[in-house]
Length: 210
Image (cartoon, rainbow, N blue to C red):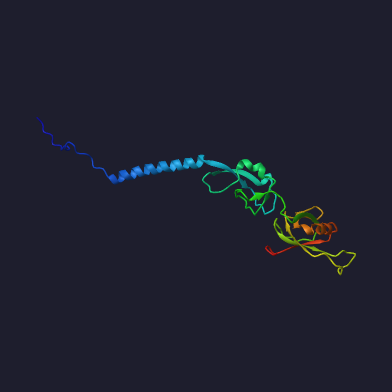
């Protein structure tokens, strides 16, 4: 009869386990599941929004090419204009300067209705009658009347009128420039007559001047 020289483990003995590693493993599994759920929610719980493809300045009219539709998460704390309203935004104007790449939020765009007490006048100015530097919509200007050529420089002229550009000046093939301005309603007729007589010079004012 042979005797076994090996040592057998006592009945009931169990392998020792490191509880710390066991708990860590459970936590990692739980965190992984939470991260997956959060990622799934972010991807699936989204909404369409309208993004600007170029910078728009205050008072500038919005064209279809200025807009695109993107998807953002619903958790984004922004009162954005939904992508479904893209066609309704086209034709409105920027209430404030809107940078390229930003999403359109409520109140950032509106209709072109004039504020009470204002009138809009279209001007066609010959070369040299306005600054050559770019002037975005919202630029504050002064419309300065010049004397009639036949009357001479000593003739009296109407007072200057403060105005605001509603669009950036657009150059024409003949060198003239087209631009629309908002003026006080009581000055609109005088400005229109001076513009028709080619007697206006447009001067840029420091922004914020009264």
